[in-house]
Image (cartoon, rainbow, N blue to C red; front, side, top):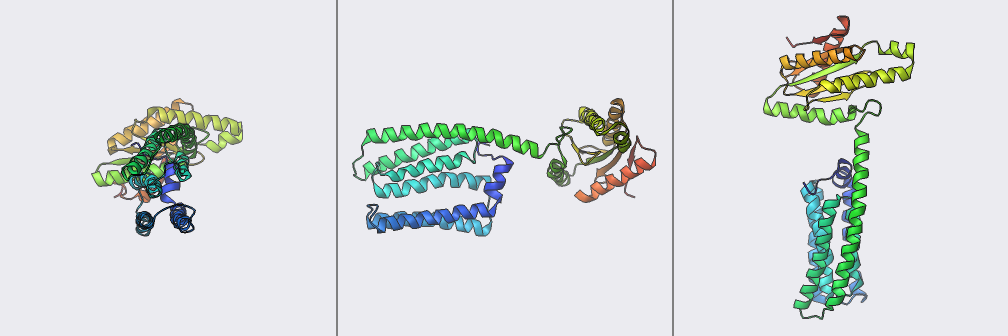
Length: 340
């Protein structure tokens, strides 16, 4: 999707009410400023043009108030408002009917602002949209019978395009930085596996899909046997090395659709969508054997939706109870706690 946002940007621009309300307040402020500058004679606009342009801008701001009151937020709304924000610059410019008026520099602000929020590819589309709006303003001005210095309009268009290309480079750099930050936020720095936060982002979605499609899902809670003994005997650096080795071993045997994450200090967790109980048992045993081959042993508690539990927390609790049984059985084994 061309307008897809990274999680960090989506959280800031869409899910954060304070951000949305700040932008909404700015829109109303700009409308008030537009009316005030015309009324004070700073900008030469006819009464009819002021009335029409102010009505259009006010309707747009009211549209955003309604969205905010109804809490309607989505990527599509974000994309729509980005385009309409540019149009709201074009409307007062048409009322001014002067392509030389410095008010057109607000176009530059829309591009700079967008560069911090969207991808490089989408930024190039934004630049094209801004340039098209300025040229449309020039054409409409000419159709209304006002003089248009086309050479000047051409130079401004080229300048906006060049600045827009520069903004797209900025957008690309910020996009890469956001991707790195987003990756760090959901990756365990020691093992390189997804961390507990990533698990809690992914697992509910996977189970909800299993519930809606009535397909099985397996959850495996894995505990590194006698890890404290390794730390006490060989030191924490050696323990860290062992954790990395086990993490790599577990990752090497899961299926491409499975998620294996570091759940805690010496615990890992595996989500296996579409895995039947028989398939889950086979996978759990492969995980145990892989850990053993790396020079360590693990205990694994297995729970399967829907037989063992039907809800997110309940399935984790079932896997935890099964893990307790594995430890009680002497460790280095797989156990289940099948609901009666």
